[in-house]
Length: 473
Image 1 (cartoon, rainbow, N blue to C red):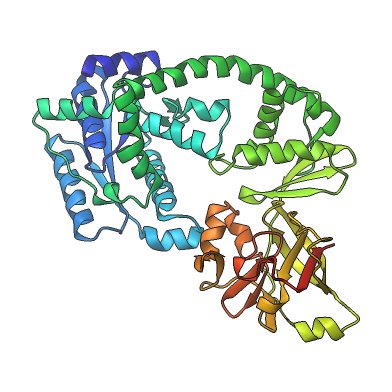
Image 2 (cartoon, rainbow, N blue to C red; image 1 turned 90 degrees about the vertical axis):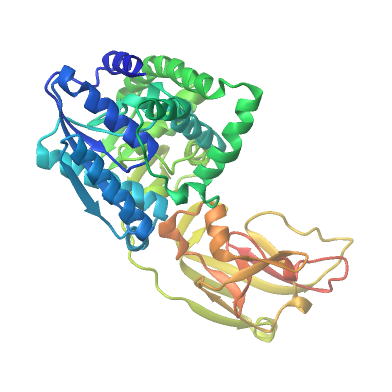
């Protein structure tokens, strides 16, 4: 085990003699294994080790036990240990991300703070082969490119991962052989987290097909890394030729982009996005393809992506830039069926609105609402995102265009309801645009998410007589 990791450290040029290393020590099997391995290599490599334990403020007494265990283990081997405490639930709300994402960000902030305080060369974290396989499969499920299939890098910037050459079973066997205890995190069994479901159900099923499935997935990522190094160099050359900077924006000719092979065009776009964000975690293939699709659209078309990135077609070029947006203005436009019937003005203006199906933001949007008779023989219920039909006789008279609220729901069929907040997550609507949706609602019952889903409670059917039609102009 130790010789295998030593060889991997050497192959990946992770350590030099005399390095100072910050070690992430949660108290779990993976981090404890990493800690013990580095302790065993301390004299041979002349290492100075500094342990960091992060208490996320989530598991109460259990987290306190993990903290004490980690401090005691570090003290036993004469390694200084610093504890960082965060209120991750509060941070997740402040940062507008899940607790899992907020916890990860907090950990790496703590590791980097300790590295700078100690003047250390690098930070060692305990990702292993199973983590690698789970990451690759998870990205495949969400949609990814060649780079995403490479998975977790063995070394990037100040981060090293010496255990990527061993799997979970090897880690547990090593700890058993040296008589080393470790603690278990109860949240690892919570099936609400996608990662846990991947670990508990998907990976074991793959190992039934082939016990070496995890190793084969990791071997594939290593081969892809070799291919990607060449591919990245070629794309980098084309990027420098075709992409220009205009102020705070990057732009490429739509004609040049469409002239490239599909995979190369996607990588050029991915590199452009990478200039505006430290992470591509929330960037999926659908975002890349949508940007490429702008090349054949008319000038003025825009897409709003994660990380406040805007892609825009402008006079033959595709431009990417970031924008800052204030809190949206509250909107409350009351309408009634009588008002629509009796009013000459049947057009309304909606401002500051995100359209989820088109993945775009509009400062101002005009809609037309009319009521007409339904003729089954002549009319076909529209299926596009710009026109929606509703059965008037199933609608309440008093309705309001407004921003979404916490208790909002819509009907999805058979009397079942779904929270609008869940819709936002399932449709991967960027967090910064979720409060820029506009809904048509009667109380908490949402009939229409403008530019998106309609509730089933007012669907047009063979018994419908009067139709309310909403058109996005």
